[in-house]
Length: 246
Image 1: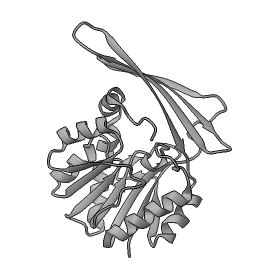
Image 2 (image 1 turned 90 degrees about the vertical axis):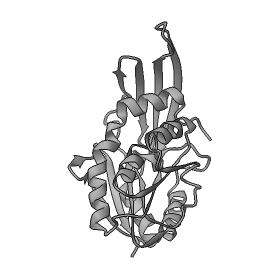
Image 3 (image 1 turned 180 degrees about the vertical axis):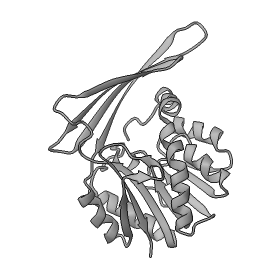
Image 4 (image 1 turned 90 degrees about the horizontal axis):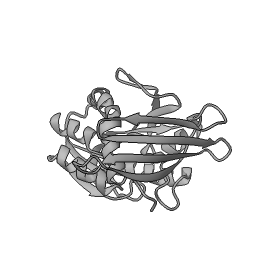
C-alpha cells in the first residue's frame, strides 16, 4: 500500500483543507433527511480527520469512519469521540448493515492499494455497499473526473499558515486518466522555529460519469448525479452520485 497522509500532511490537510467537508455537511444531512434517514448508522469510507463523522454524531446518527491513514484516524478520534473508526482500505472493507454510506473528497480515486484504479474494482465495492444498506438506504459518493489540469503544463500552487506550508504540483495524463499530485510540506517541529520537511506523491485514477453510472446500476442502485450538494457547488470536474438501494 502506498504512503497515505503521514502525520504532517494529515495535519495540514485538516487545518488547511478541512473546510470542504464542513461545507458539504448541511447539504449531506438534507440528502439523508429527504431519503427518510433521520438516524441509524452511517459508514464514511475515507473519513479523513473526522469532520463529517463529528457532524453526524452531533446530528444524532451513529458514525463509523474508515481510512487507510493512521495519522488521519488519530485526528478523527480526537475530533469525534462518539464515532467509531477502523483502519482499513475502503476498497477492501466490508461495511456492516447500515442506513447510509458516504465517500467524499475523491477517496475512491486514490491508487493507494495494489489493484486500485479499475471500474471492475469499484464495481465490487459498490456491490458490497449495496448489500450492506437497508432497503431505501443511500450511498453518496463524490469523485474527481478528467479535466483536473486544464492545460498541458502541470498545475502548481502553495498554501501558507503560521506553522506550516505546502507546495504542490499536479500533472494529468489524458490518455491513462491518471493524475499525479506531488507535495512537499513544511511543519514547525518545535519551539525553536525549526521546520520539518516531508514529501508525498499521490496518484489517482480519474473516472468519467459514463464509467461510474453502469457500475452503480449493475450493483443494483438507482442513481442520480449532482454538481452541487446543498448550497455548496462542487469543484470543476467533480461529481457526486446519490445511489439508492430500492
